[in-house]
Length: 436
Image (tube, rainbow, N blue to C red; front, side, top):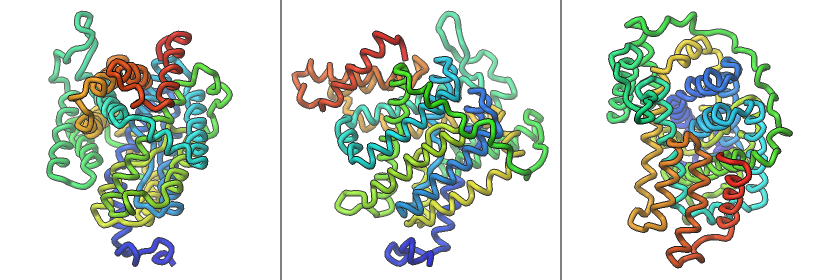
C-alpha cells in the first residue's frame, strides 16, 4: 500500500531507503529543536517548553503534509531566519507582543495560501528580480551569524566603534563557543551527515566535561504543556496598518525561501519535468498550511528546509522520506529534559547560528556585481539587515532602491509594475510610521 501510494517503483526506491533518508534529513535539521526554543523562549519571552513542543509539532505537521499531499522528500520546520526576525526585530526591536507577532505570522500564512490557490504566486515570484531574492537570503545569513556572535559575547558593544571583539576571549563560555564552531566546521568539511546537530551535541558534551554546562536532569519525560502558546495569536492586533511591513517580510522570505528550496531539492532528486516542478501548488499549499498551523501552535513561520538535500543524497525520492522525518519530530517531544539543558546555553546554539549564516551567505555569488543597478540595491539590502538589526528594513531599502537605480540606468521597463507599487508602499511606511 505504501509502495503504491508513494510510487516507489516509479521513483526507483523502496521503504528502507526512504526511511533512512528521512532519518538523515531529521538529523541535519534537528538543531532547530534547540535553537527555536532558545530564540522564541529565552529571548522573546515565550514559554520555553511550549515553544519546544510547538516547534516539534509544526515540523511534524509540515513534513507530513509535504509528504502526503505533494509526495516530495522535503521536510519543514520553523525557519531560523524568520524566527530571528520574529524575535529580534518584531518583539525585541519594535516592542510588539509576541501574541501580535504570531497573528502576523498567521495572516502571512493565509495570504500565502490565497496566493497559491489563485496562481498569483507565480506572478509575484517572476516580478522580483533574482538579485534581490539572493540578497535577502544572504542578508538574513549575515543577520543570523551576527546574532550568534552577539549572544555568545564574542562581539560586544563599544562606545567608540559601536561594536568590537571581546577583550577577554579566554572566558570558558567563549572558548566553548569557539570549540563548537571549529568542531562543526570540521564535521561539515568532512561531509558528515547531520554535522550541525552533532556539532551541538559534541559542544554540549565538552561543556559538561569542563563544568560549564550542567548535567541534564534526565533524558525522557512527558512533553511540556502547549497551553501557554496554543491559539494565543492576536490576529486583530496584527491587522493594524502599521504591521504591513512585518506581514510582508514574513510572507516575502517564506515565499522565495520555499520556492528556492523546492526547486533545488527537486532538481537534485531528478524530479523536475521540462524545468518545471510537478505538483508545485500542492507543495506550496502544504507549506502555507504548515505556517498557519504553526502560528496556532505558537511558533514562527514554518518553511521548507534546504537540509532536505541530505536526505535526497541518501536516496530519498518520495514523500515517505518527509513522513519519516515527521514521525521523528513527534518522537522528539519526549526529549525535553535534554533540550531544556542544552538550548539555554548560548555556546551550544551560537555555532549553529554562525554556520547557518555561512550557508545562507553563499547566495552572494549569484548577484550581478558588475552591474551597478543590480549591485547597489543588493549590497544595501545585505548590509542594512545586520546594521539596523532588522530584516524588514533591509528588504524595504532594497525594494525602494532597485526601481530608482533602474530608472537612473535608463531601464525603467526592466522593473515589474508590482515592484514600483511595493517601493511606494515602503516609502509611505518610512514617512508615516518611521523605521521598520
